[in-house]
Amino acid sequence: MTNVDNLIGNSKKMIDILGNSYEYNCLGCEIASKKITPPGGIIYEDETFILASDPEVPLKGFLIVNVKRHINSVTELSIDEQHRMIEIVSKAINVLKDLNITKEVTLVQEERSKHFHMWIFPHQDWMIEKFGKGISYLRDICKYVQENVTDKELTEVMETIELIKNAYK
Ligand SMILES: [Zn+2]
Figure 1 (cartoon, protein in one colour):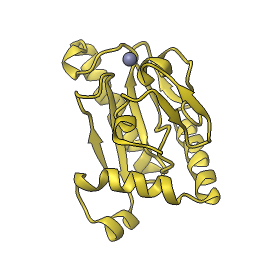
Figure 2 (cartoon, protein in one colour):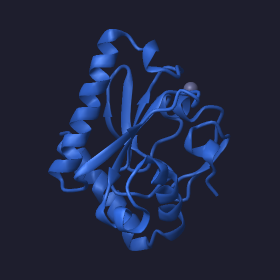
Figure 3 (spheres, helix red, strand yellow):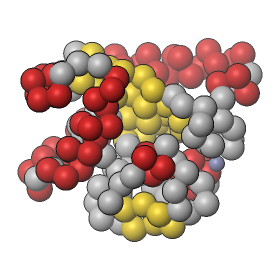
Figure 4 (cartoon, helix red, strand yellow):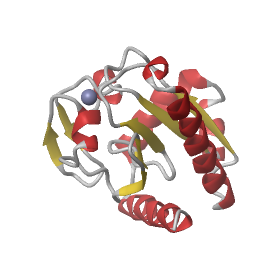
């Protein structure tokens, strides 16, 4: 179902982890304009950024920082926005660790994605056992999770989003 284009936000169709089907021109813009709500809703929002769960990968604590403007590079953010982005990322990592969702994250941002977003990818022990360490395994892990998620795990993913939202209150 999900292909590489989908994961970098260049596709026109998406089925989210709850089974909602969307068509769009730009996923980042649709999320920014609230036409698409990421599963579990928005965790944090200010005038420039939205923090929410990944819509397509049912993995506990997999978060995405979306920029509201249609830009594709961190260089297009103002200096203040660049600083704020790192604060948002840093806080999100601290929340994930405080909630024992992960001990270690990987950050990914690809300029080839037309709308800026950054992955905050939470590593878990089973991933290392099954796939090994390193950035080359991220897509394999995402694909595996999408294909093998159980109803119980999906419930846990949604409960985790609530826990993270509560940590922001
Ligand atoms: Zn966009």
